[in-house]
Length: 388
Image (cartoon, rainbow, N blue to C red; front, side, top):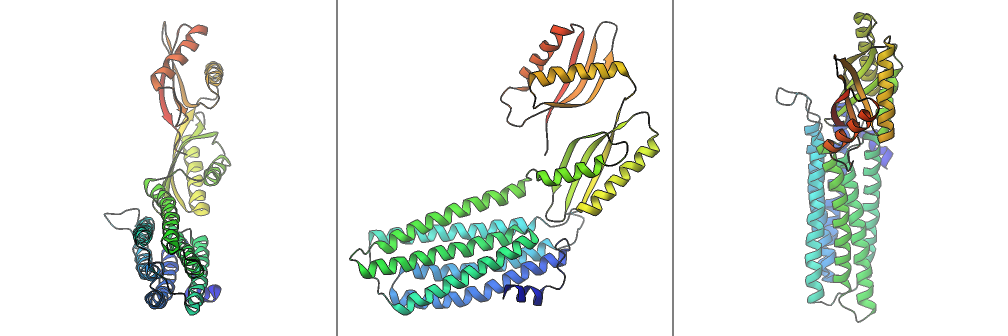
């Protein structure tokens, strides 16, 4: 069924194409609306017959799920809008915004279910067991499991986190409905009438925890999380395979939504090569990265002196001192300014994000280590953190 729907509705499966991504979101939303409206009607009838707060809450939740599906459709539609003057990088992050809205729906479900369940614990009511009700609820679980599988497949195909949110919502429904069935059985087979409420509280906690995890993931995308190690490795590999590019630093990757990644990097190149040749190499690297990774990148050339033995010796001295101080530190843009009495080592020092020592203490200790060996050398350091 899943493959049939995808084949029927989506002709272009290139997920980097904006219209294709929009189609995936629309397919998820339309399918979800049809399933959720049908389940809402069934569950509301069952909840009324059995007087079960869990079943009724499930019915209302299915209706809100249909609202989530509408959000998914709108999110895909807005994310597919072309660039404009106000949004030169496009509207791709609307996928993240729609996922955040669906996450809020999950929170509302968890809160409302928790509130109703607590009331049910305080004021328990007799629940009427009905075999037909249980059968229909089992069917509802089967439908929701299929919806979770369906949206998970769409998510894996597109990487659209909004579809992951809809998938999680479907799984939450499976958990809630399973708990409802358990409460019906316990209440009918034992004199314990608070099972319905207790089950509801447990399910509410599970739903809220899942919602928190999803929100953290979505917000991380919106704030701008670090690129994956695999992506960084591919960018570096393409650049370093080009003639004259000796090393790379200050690689920055900006995510403006799927298929809209902007990056920049500094490429160390030999200073004794004609600048026209170097510029051509940089252009080639930029085009390859754009073609192979669909990333628009701007590469800055950092000339490095390669035929000055004295500079090499100075750089090795600094490399040894920094390595002895902390092997996780790296440095780049190394220059030497020699005066009549003092020689300045000028460079950028890259330290880990969670390094405990303050910048001033690092500078002081490195300067002290250098002065013990070379009293006439002064360090001029710019401390920074890696962006990857």
